Image (cartoon, rainbow, N blue to C red):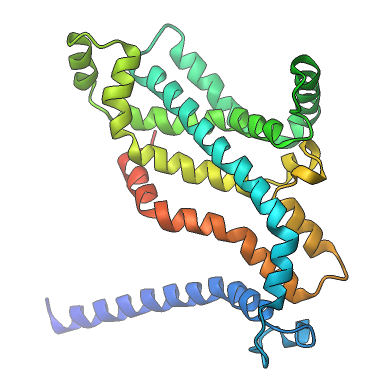
Length: 284
């Protein structure tokens, strides 16, 4: 490599790093404002001082925000954890059948599944309410107005994308493994449990991150399907942020608290998420 080529390469690398650094700074600016404002006392929590560091550091806003948001955070846990696991289980079984245990009409059924991803939330609001009210009357349990109904809505709505992710991932598994399992006498469920499920880690990580984030950040379904005692963190955060009497420091602290679980999920499973993407979970 000549000196001129080496110089051009260093300049190109420097430009790319400079652009990336500028984008990182732009991305972190809102987080900086959130953090410094959340640690300010009431006298300093003002838009005119948004860029300044606190003159007096305090965690009082965090304490108040936690007291207001804690019930919603717990409701979000009750919503996101079982909803993600159920979506993952249903998507895995659907993807397995549609890719490795095919039947007449499997392609048509898969296409119909995919159509489900393009139905907007607003288009199913009234039918969904009627369905959950009917389940209340039929079972005597509380689906409409409570967390179980919200979990059910998200699990049903998540079936198309979860099925797509698992189906495209399972297509990459060699058919010889399935055939060898059949030769050994394993049936459909035994093959799924002993052969397919143990190699599904990357796809499971993708679906768990996807669904957990979707359920945790849900607002629209939560507003019209649940009552005040079942509101998740996003609805309670909206009430805190929308209240004119709430200091900015408490609003900022509440926003950070509401986003911590999704950040933890990405930190813990992010490596597996990228591996799942590279392995084909979202290809096809």
